[in-house]
Amino acid sequence: MSDFNINENADVFNEEPKKKQNIFVRILKWIAVSLIVLICLLLFYRCVTSTDHPIVKKVLMNEAFFEAYENNPEEVRVQQYGMQSAWVSVDEGIIIEFNHLYHIPKTNQLQFSIKYNHDIVKGDFEGIPFRLRLVDESGNVFDEFFYENASRERFRYIRVCFENIKLTTDELDENGNPKRHSYVLEIDAVQPDGSYELLCKYEVYDGDSNRSAVFKNIDFEVE
Image (cartoon, rainbow, N blue to C red; front, side, top):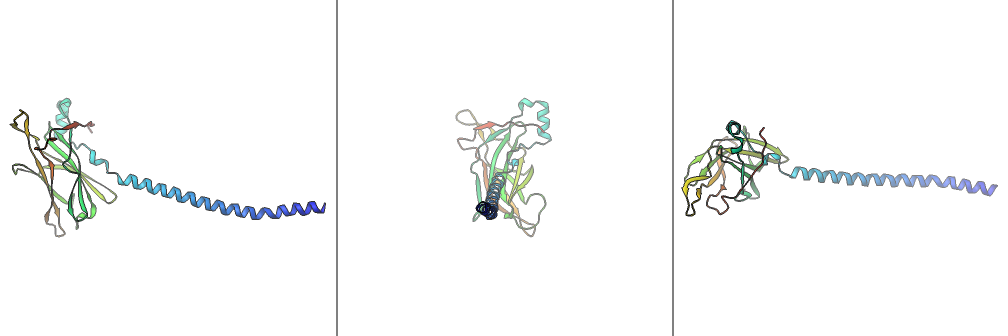
């Protein structure tokens, strides 16, 4: 009996150290799991915030668009053209990105997106920190536009739509196809004193390129 009691007591005494070890291991496991979950959440957050804001693909619409659509929705088409380049450098290590070039023949509207880092402009300003204009191959200036802007993380976005923009001219080339205009975007940036200085030029549309007539129709929903 005494031997049985001694062995039984020995087992009882051995249980507590095992329990303490199990608790310690569990704490380590929970810490490891928490770190993994945290890393996954951070990676997911970075993936979400690194993607462009949905505004870059938006079809901007105004009264002219709505009126044309109401009169004959079948005639209103949104055509997407390729950009000449994805970005332009304005300073060492600083770029401005451009994408999603749409043209609406029925309303003669040309729209695209501008993406820039929020610290590219210094000082206070109202609305957007730029003055924008399109200049065609003949030097004609088009500065009538409307826009929407948005932000995500350290980036700012401007979706801009220029009015009275025709891509084709009244002249025909040697193949009997309409000749096409070219448009260069000029951007003036606001300065700390409130004045504006030319920041960059960007060729939005090159009517002389071989792919200038290549486009695809974009689906859209009228708001």
